[in-house]
Image (cartoon, rainbow, N blue to C red; front, side, top):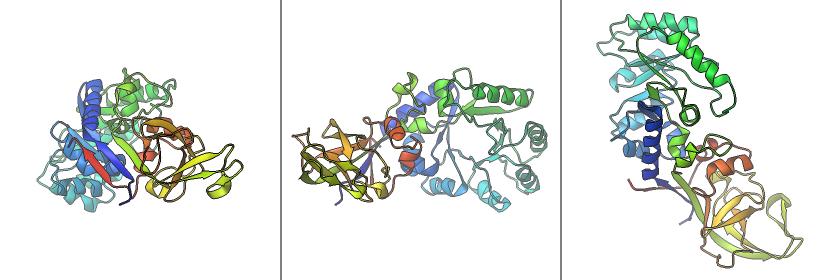
Length: 357
């Protein structure tokens, strides 16, 4: 059996959720969209359900997967509904729903139901992606609040640049949000992972931790609070072949690595079809039997190569850790020209094994 695998530490996931809740000082929706950022939404939701205040997903398909797996906790649809025809399913499965457009407000108003909808009304405070303008927001709040089938609203927005700790945009968005919701009834939700970790002056009744749940630092540099996070995923495989090449010999596609000395090469069963970045450069860190080493040569679809020259203990069957506690995905991502969000989300084909269920 191919040795590539992802180990998912559910104790680390629970630890990170508790940290998010502690920092937020209120209630926390665990964001498990995109298959829990590649970690497995059903398994992660099951691990968190005994203590989570609820979950957040992108769309109704992701919510129904959780409901079909037996998850009973509240689930928020962050993108709301894409067609009014989804509203009966939202009612049937007791889903919470973001409302971000005037047409969605009207669709809710036209719905005939005895149920009470739990809606999160979204303000565009400066992200300029989804959300109502401040003027439309207050009008929508009044319209929805007057409907007998709508419960107390949660007022939400999304921060565009909270991972840039010196940028004024976060404070500007928070101030606009505060001005817009002033005097309106309902709880608030503003904080994502970087806001929870880096902007203590920005707080809301509900927080929405995403990346930090999975143990990744959302900032480009070291951050003290992010040090308290525990990586949830360890991606690893094994050396499946060992060979030696002479000085001047190229290795792999495109000859991106050329040996400067007699080089002992380990071939590892892991490639870009598994989700490892194809253009990781020479020298990208890996752990070889627990000792820091480096990748050499271009990553192939199914294999990559590491330098075993200075690892005499390593050979056929040696364990190679691609990311986890070391190197972290936050360290790996900028080296590979990608982001800590994208790496675990890109995981494919690799079986996941769950620790501490």
